[in-house]
Length: 234
Image (cartoon, rainbow, N blue to C red; front, side, top):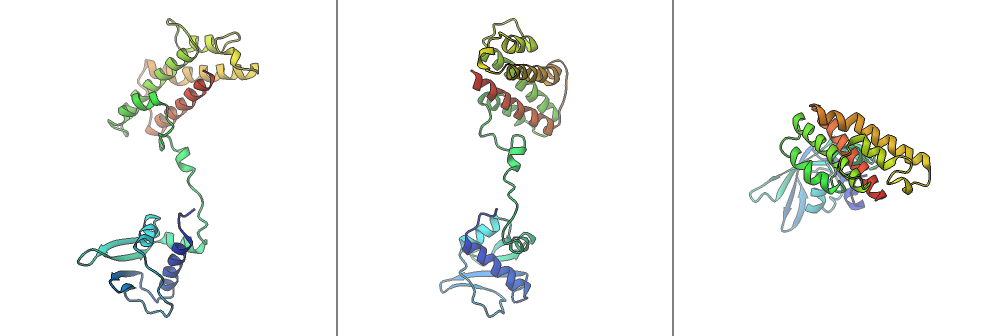
């Protein structure tokens, strides 16, 4: 939904109506002076609504207006309505809520990313997030972090690696087996982590994989979920 007040919505409706009825050109100027505000080339009879600079800036931030500063002191604005403005008014501002997109986009929001992933993987990507070689390194490090966390949470001594750790942690009678009241859930965890090691961790540990940024980002976000699940079992 648009982040607009009712007054800001009414202001945009007024702009769209006046341009649509040709009482206002598609490109117009909003001018502020000591005596108040005005709009250039307006030929309609309806009173001009209050033209606060803040309201104009918010409409611009929402992508509903394109504006640029003009005048000697750059206090006035040259404005043009965008297609989005007409769509917003036509649908009564019932735009689809796309805030979910950030949750579907790997690494779009690192707020809740595991601390160790932030400290060890993100600096690698900072060297070139479009470079598949950087993602290869980041994925490899993420796999090591997952293995070490599994060893730590599962209290597994040195000398075991990969699926051997998974089995000692999640097998019937394993170090975390008592955390599960339903045996099929314990087995599901074993299969999940064993599958991740076989499918992702082991290949990246033994050869160059060079995943795409989309694949690499998805894996790191997946590892973040697996780390959280382990911490919940700690």
